[in-house]
Every structure is written in structure tokens, then in C-alpha cells.
Length: 535
Image 1 (cartoon, rainbow, N blue to C red):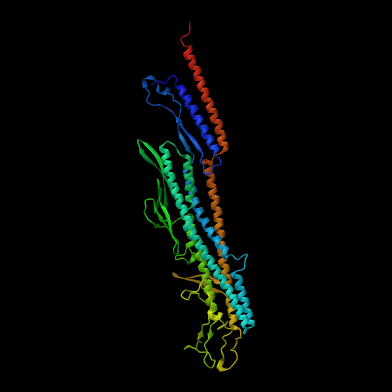
Image 2: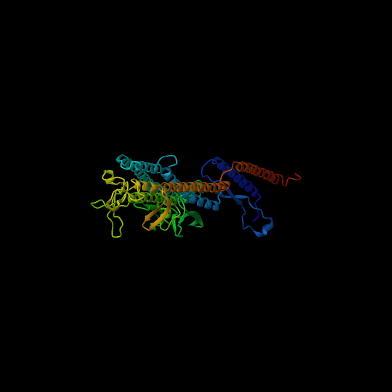
């Protein structure tokens, strides 16, 4: 097939059209330079070459193409950077949720700028010292009781505040976080359907894809996801692109969250402790519990704060959540009650006032507890402790001394004083104690020191967790910003680049127009100037 004499006009026309469309795409990019989530668009073109010409009419080496063909408009994205960004979003979501939990705990337990349990412990010691100086004074005994009640009120308040944080996080997780994640999943599935319908009608739906990519990035902050694209054959060789999103847990089990317009769902069971997270894939398989197998994301970070207790878990976990501080506080309260109740025992005496002993010669002691559980069926904890009723009612007070009277005679035994038991209490409050959490999986020794220092240690651990979390959060923000910058270098609109493109396509448009003029002049000479010699 010989090239048409007027084929050059087709080439020039196609060049004009391509340059014009390229200018329009450049204008679209410039118009959306400040649009969040917008991906830079590009005109896709290729050389137009019609095959099948007759071999006999032209030398194959002399064949010329027929111009340029517009194949579509596409987005400039790097799939690798998208994957990296979404992985970083999941890690950022984990740390962000954990730091948010630690900040709530710090508002309760950090006494750096306020008087609280540490001050109350010091005041209790001070009141016991006054009682030691006035051992027979009911007034000072009452002051010790009042100081103890203030301390218990602070324990109750902390326990209540910790429970409120747990309840608030649980409700937020169940009523806000999970529905938000499910809504994102549903919206992505609806966009999948809209994009597919648009592509069937010949519209690339690039703006809808931008919206979908933003939602995918947001979903990646909740849990780790994998995005896969596939071609769907509609018949007659026509295909459209479809998107599937998978969640794979730490055990390697995959769940298809989104496929075409089908969606999976996340759900919780927060009736008891710990909070459980379940997943049902888009084909209705499940629900399967993924509480302890979720790898990263806001969901994991929140579950860690709600469910994990660090060294008190069985086996021990790497995250000290609300449970760690609840159990640490409970262990401190139980130890305080145990020590002071034990010191307040009195020896049983016979009718003559002599101590009663057991078969081994040890004195038999009578319990006079200073503290007892509010609910007698449960152990003493920060929320379940009160001043013993008989101490509150004045049936007995602080045991001043357990001095034994030898041979029925009056006086004190060697080395004993009238306030020895109160001094023992004072010493016990500042002495080194072994603090142990007694859990279902066994006892866990977690600190050795005074009551005051034990609370300070818990406070310091929380500050370390918070500072470490903030440091990690800053690092992850830096990494994700770097990844975002790399994405923007490819997908973002650069005013400088688009300005250069404007000049480039304007010049190519002018050149195509000049080509058409030149061809017109050549053909004019051919048509109107041929065969006129000698006329």
C-alpha cells in the first residue's frame, strides 16, 4: 500500500490533536496543584504505524509512519513507594495508638506537678511519728486513721480513673475505630464498582482512583494490608482493572477484605477482658479472632494498651498496657495492707495478763486489721480496700506495743519501749519490701524497695514508656514523611515541571501547525504548478 499524497495532513492533524490534549492535561495538573490526594496525570501517546502495506509498491526500509496516536491518560505512580508508604502507615498507627494510651495513663499516675499518693504516704509516716510521741492519744490515732483514709481515697481514685480509661478506650475501639475502618472498606468497594463502570464506558476515572488511593492509605493505618490488581475480562478482548485488598496476620493466614464490590468486616467482643478483634472476609468466611495475631496498625496499638500487662502476662509481653499499671498498683496496695495489718496484731493474754503461747512457745496473736476488702469475697486491691470497720468504729486502734511481761511482773522486757510497734510501722513504710503480683499464672516479683519508691518506680516506668513511644513516633513520622516526599516527587504536581511542559507542548503545537502549512504549500505547487510549462 502506497502512502497517500495527503497522508502528511493526517500526520499534522494528529500532532496538533496530541499537543492540544497534552496542553489540556498540563492545565488539569496545574489546576489541581493544591488538591489533596491528586496524582499527576500524563498523556499516553505512541507512534502510529499501519501495517499490512503491499510489499511491491514500496521499499520496506522507506516506510514512514502516519503520525501519533493518543492511547489514553494515565497517572504517574510508583507501586513500590505505595507499598512502602502503606507499610509505614501501619507502623505509625501502632505507635500513635500506644502513645495516646500512655498519655491518658500519665494524666492519672504522673504526680510530678501535683500532690498524690507519694505525698499521702509521706503524710502517713508523719502522723505515725506523732503517734509514737503520744502513744496513748486517741486523737493522734484518729489522725493516723484520717491520713490512711486519704491515702485509700487516692488509691480508689487512681483505680477508678484507670478503669475509666479502659472503658473509654474500649468503647472508642468498639463504637468508633472499628466502624470507621469498616466504613473505609465499604467505601473502597463502592469506588471499585464505580471505577469499573466508568472504564467500561471508556472513562479512565482517574479522580475516582485518587479518592480510592487516599482511602487505601487511610485503611493501611488501621491494619497491615496488601493491594493487588488484576485484569477482568469482559469479553471480545476488552478488560478492565480490578483491585483486591488482603489482610495477612502474623501467622500467615490471609483474609480477603475487598474483592470487586464485596467487603469483609471487622468486629469486636468487648463484654469481658481482654477485648477481642474478629475478622470476616469478603466471602463471609469467619469470623476469626485475630486479637493476638494482628501485626501492626491502630487496631494493634489500641489492643496492646487494653490487653497487655508486660511482665504480668503469661507469657510476659513486650507492651506494658493498662493492665500492668492496674496490677502494679493493686500489688502495692495489697502489700501495704499486709504489712500494716500484720504489725497491728496483738498477743493473746490469759486472765492474769500473761501472753498465751502455742506448743512451740510462740505467742498466739490476735488479728486487729487496719485495712480490709470492701467486698470480702475478693482480695484487697486498689479499688477494693477500706479502713477496717472495727478501727473506724473505735473498737481498737493502732497497736502501740506488744511488750511481754515476764513472770507476771510489771515492766517491759529488755530493749522494748512503749511505742515499739508504731516505730516498726514507721520503719516498715521506709524499709525495703518485696513487691509481688499474685496472678493466676503464678507470682511475679516486680520491685524491691520502699512503698514510696515503688510508686515512684511505676511512675518512672510510665514516663519511660511515654518518652520511648514519642521518640519512636517521631522517627516513624520522619520515615513516612521521607516516603511521602519520594511519592510526591513522582506523583505530585511540580509547578516548574508543568511550566516547562506548557512551553514544550505549545512549541510542538506550533511546529505541527507549521508542518500543515508547509505541506499545503508543497501540494499547492504540485497541484497548481504541474503541467503548465510551455503554456
